[in-house]
Amino acid sequence: MKRIIIVFLMIMPYFLWASGSDDELGPGLYADFTTNRGNMIFRLDPDRTPLTVTNFCGLAEGTLPNDYREPGEPFYDGLTFYREAAGYALFSGDPSGDGTGGPGYTIPRETGALISAGAPGILVMDGFATESAGSRFFIILEGDAYLDSKYTAFGRLISNIKTLKKLRRGDTIESIRIIRVGGEARRLKFNSDSFAEHLAEAKTAEIENLRIISPDLADAVLALGDERQKTPTGIYYEVLKTGEGGEPGPGAQVSMHYTGTLLDGTVFDSSRDRDQTFDFILGKDGVIPGWIEMVMGMQPGEVRKVVIPPFLAYGDQGYGPIEPNSWLIFEMELVSFTEG
Image 1 (cartoon, one colour):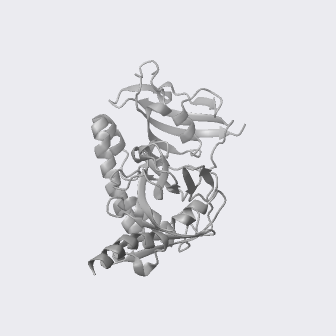
Image 2: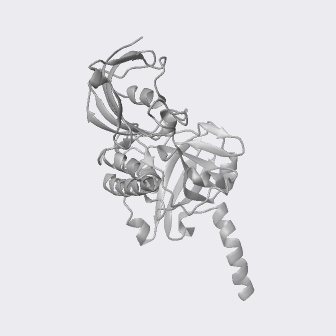
Image 3: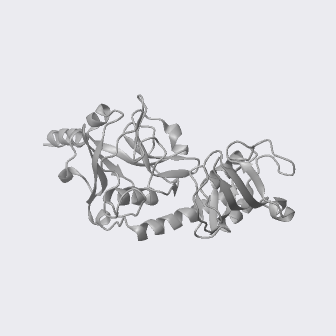
């Protein structure tokens, strides 16, 4: 009898790996991917990556508002695997299909994951710098633990690795069904309230991490307020005043007012002090990359306060009174623009 039990326990994980119907799943939270190549089931980690999982499940179930789908519509249904890094990873979750799209927002990258990208079949949020993409994700084909320091792994494949091996660029996600097994999983909510709660927690943790790097940087970001936003490239900003009239594109003739300060509060330049706008051609004249990114998302009359990281400012070279590797603070106003 003991031998029979041991054999059963040995084959059970393989059976789950190969099949994985709902009745065989232990307590926990799961995502069942149905694709044109078959289905796959991933076990998710809401305990260590609550914001990432809440965001993913809310989009999958259509319970989180976004810029792509109508309320109640599942976000991922019908999206393709738009990119394949041969033998490495498959990318999906982008409605534009080119690696630039999403739900209209990003989320802070969570760093508490216990799941490692060092194994195949790991579900990972895509992103840039310290920010995760709002909806884009990739599935690891071959493990690479280096990714753990760059991205948030939030799920692992437990069923149908054969499907994963069949998937190619251009294949389709027909649906993603979220499965709750057990009382704890059934109590999880993936709505705007739970998302806001976890987002606030993540932002608090982010400030604590920034304070380790630089107390002045943490204070500058915190001063932007609770409505602060962060771009995928790592620029923090607050919209102080909205504008109207459309956004300038590359080649536009732009007129701006600005005041630039260092983290210690030192003003290093100001067009307002000169009572003269700063005029330049967007994308052609030599302004810092962080400025270009911000201006292309503004409308005439809009005022933003922004905190720009060094690699989008003057980098390790510095400029005049700006020391190398300096974060910069700007209050920027788009006065007007004329398309080129």
